Length: 459
Ligand SMILES: C[S@@+](CC[C@H](N)C(=O)[O-])C[C@H]1O[C@@H](n2cnc3c(N)ncnc32)[C@H](O)[C@@H]1O
Image 1 (tube, rainbow, N blue to C red):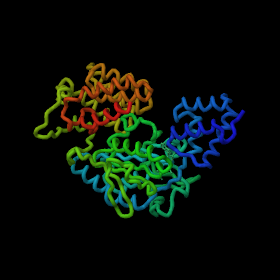
Image 2 (cartoon, protein in one colour):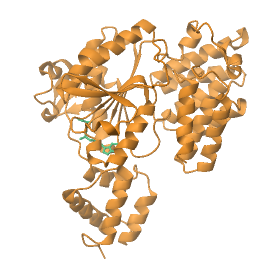
Image 3 (cartoon, rainbow, N blue to C red):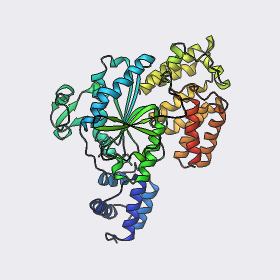
Image 4 (cartoon, helix red, strand yellow):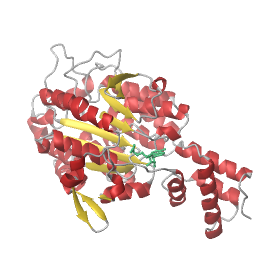
C-alpha cells in the first residue's frame, strides 16, 4: 500500500532528504517528492514504503533513486555572469590583484571553485573572465572546479550547449558573440573555455571536503551563490567553516546576494565592493606573507627553492629535498608526471610514473602521486592500494596518511581513519610550522595540523 501524503513515512522521507542534502522542502517540493516516491514504489522491487526509506538511507547521493529525488528537490536557476556587481568586483579588483601577486611571486597558478554550479554557467563565466584578463593564459596553471549534487545538471554542464535563457540582461552583450557558436538546439561554448573547467559531483553537506581527492584544497576563490539559501543556518555555518579550510590564506568566498548573514561566516572578513560584499580568509595567528604563495610542485625540481635565511629543514624531508644523482631521473619523471596530473592528463601522468618506477627504487612519492592520479581518475581501489604502498615505503609520509585517513573515513571506517590522521600528525609534529610539505602544492605543516585536528575532533 502506498502512503498518503502527511503520513509518518513521508515525514521520515522529508527528514532524510533534508539531512542528506541540506535542503528544506517547501509544500510544493514535498508534494513533488511524495508523487515521485509513489512512482518508485509502484515501479520498483521495493514495495513497502518504510523499506524504501530504509533502503534510501543506506545509499549514497549518487544512487539513481537519490538522483531522481535530488532532481525534484533542487533548483538549477542560473545564467552567465549572474550578478553583475560581483562579476565587476572580480573583473576589476579581486582577480587582477591576485594575478599580479602571482606574477610577482613567479607562481602563475590560480584555483577557482564554483560550489553548487548547476548547469555550469557560473564556472564557465569564470573561465571566460580569466581568458579576457590573461593574454598569456597558456602559460598559467589554472584550475576551475564546478561541483553540484545533481548529476543531470553536471552532464548538461559538460556538454556546454546552452539555450537563450542562459543569457540574460546582466550577461555582457559580447559574451555570446565571442565565446559561442550558434548550432542546432542552442549555443555551443568554445572548446578553449570548456576545457578549463572540470565538473565533479560533490554534496556540500557531506563531510568529504576539503580534501585532495575532491580537489578542493588551496582554493583562491570560491563562489557558492544561491545554494545555501535553501539550507538552515547551522548547515550553512558548517559549510562556511569548510570553505574557510578549503581556501588559501587571503582567499575569497563569494556568496549570493540573498545570503548576507555575516555572522555565519566565522573566521572570514567581509570586504565591501561596489554594491556587493565578499568574504576573505584572514588568519590572525598567521602573519601575512607575500612569499607564501601557491607554488606548483614541479618548481621544486626545476628551479632552486628560495628558503628563508633561518629555514630549518625538517628531518623527514632531508632525504627528498636534495636529490642525489641517482635519484635525479626518478625526480625528473616525477615532476613530469605531476605537471601532467595538474592538467588532468592521467594517461601521460601514468606513463611518467611507470618510468619513475622503472628506476627500480621504491620511492614513496611516486606511489603517492600515482595514488592521487588513480583517485582523481575515479579508480578508488587502486588509489587506496598505491597510497598504502607509499606509507609502506615511508611510514612518516604525512600526506599519504592524511589522504588514507580521508578515504577510510569516507568508507565509514572511523578507527582506521583516526589511526592514519594520527600518524600524519605524529609525522609532522616536530616540524617548522611554516614549512611547505614536500609533494604538496603549498600546504604548510601548520595548515595540515589544522586540517587533521578538525578531522580528529569531528570523529
Ligand atoms: C540556484 S542553483 C545556483 C547556481 C549558481 N551557483 C548561480 O548562482 O547561478 C543551486 C544549485 O545548488 C545545488 N545544490 C543544492 N544542494 C546541494 C548540496 N547539498 N550540495 C551541492 N550542491 C547542491 C543545486 O543542485 C543547484 O544546482
